Length: 171
Image (cartoon, rainbow, N blue to C red; front, side, top):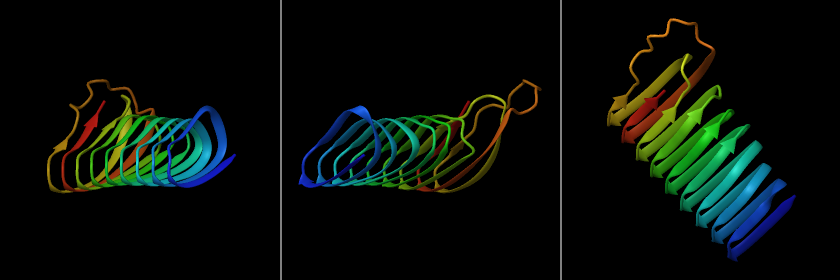
């Protein structure tokens, strides 16, 4: 477990950590993995290779990048992109100015909010998708309907509120 607070420094760990609480005014966070954690930085990027339970990460100015997430994840960036490579949990992501990308999602619920930026989510084939999307200025891009008549293997709910930007769903 680790609890770190500093005005100006980078935090890096090459080993998996248990519970973390990190608060930085200025600096980047680069972690190999966490079980559970809260990470806040005013100016700096957050990069976590894997999350096994829960993480809440927020930055006023910087990007958030997650390799894999198996639990619940809450991400917010005032000015920055949010990128998650693989998630089997629940995701809530919001960005005032930046894109949100969820490359491969196998969880049950994802929520995206963006004032100025696009959102993209990749879902596996044979997924029944309940989509609730509000886009004020942008396009909704959906994949072609599957020709595979096999029944759905999973069900997921995606909610998105985007003021200026596109929402893209990929299979």
